[in-house]
Amino acid sequence: MEKLTIKSWALDDRPREKLLGKGKTTLSDAELIAILIGSGNREETAVALSKRILKSVEGNINNLAKLSVKKLSSFKGIGEAKAIAIITALELGKRRQLEIALKKPKITSSKAVFNIMQPLIGDLEHEEFWVLFLNNSNKVLAKSQMSKGGLTATVVDVRLLLKQALEMASVAIIICHNHPSGKITPSNADKELTKKIKIAGLTLDIRLLDHLIINEKCYFSFADENQL
Image (cartoon, rainbow, N blue to C red; front, side, top):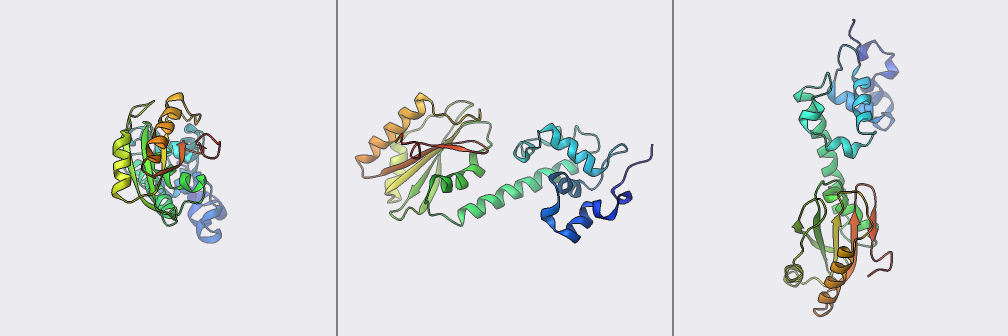
């Protein structure tokens, strides 16, 4: 069978030429990945192969970013070098998203917190608990991982959390954690921990402004839902 190549396509259908002629935003996810891998296999063009890879993760780029070199290499036409190229590009995109978020460190809404924390914990397969330490202008002084746990829970040392807040002269905090299950409904343990941190903070004049439960695409805000 003759190998299918992108060069045999109409000029407007070639991803590289399309990017040069029409701009990067006109390319589909599959076309962008096709540029990364350069070629397909004997039965598929790079674009067709890229579409098949995306289909395996239901077209979700975040899910694609979770695939290992071994898993990507299981697709015919994807060797170790191409797999690494895909992983590298997605990691750079994630870091760019985080840098953009950190350029606006003032917290004005729960959405602003989500934009900062989602790149860090939104797609993790284990649970992590983080704190944002704020000054009296609601600007982020620092963010800190307080605990890292398993699939369902983490253990948080409230005394250590407040100790860090005092050391940074923080007047307010926002706590965040992810749910690897994807569900953002707070558990009874989440509610109890929120209450415990809020009460402990009040004795030290450190306000708990919000608690966010985060997944890949959305979040639950205790403050927005009037549950603080």
